[in-house]
Length: 204
Image: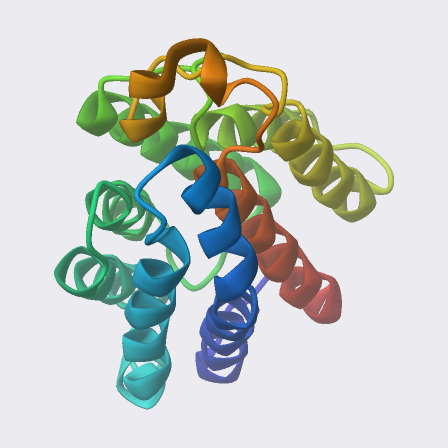
């Protein structure tokens, strides 16, 4: 699959607009178990990505992904900026304009390890990793109807954070009171996965 300039622009715009449109939902989720700023922070970061989309998409895929990551680190507050920035910057180190599913899976797995190291967290702790790791497994496995399965996996994985007790992040301070609420980082990750897959469907 070739990710040319037009595809890069479509990818970044779709992801950014999906996150921006969901800012209120993310804020409500974070208000229940965090600082209540996840939606506003993510919106600010992706508005900056959207404002720079022409410049970003003019670069190679790797360099453009690094640019998105750098923008998120600089503009998104809290823990989310460094974590999402790490994810995109790591992807940018591995991916070129010609991408196979196998290459994408390997780059995604490496990026997730970078996020784990940055956040000192792992799956099962009520974080974005509870979405990213299941999605990575589906991407690695491949097979028929992969785009539908990627979207469903991301959505269902975010929902599975509801009964979890938070171990990392601000929500961990609540202990058992964090149970019963979807993790906002898991939800924003699911939104991003869904948007990326939607664009990839159009390129296939």
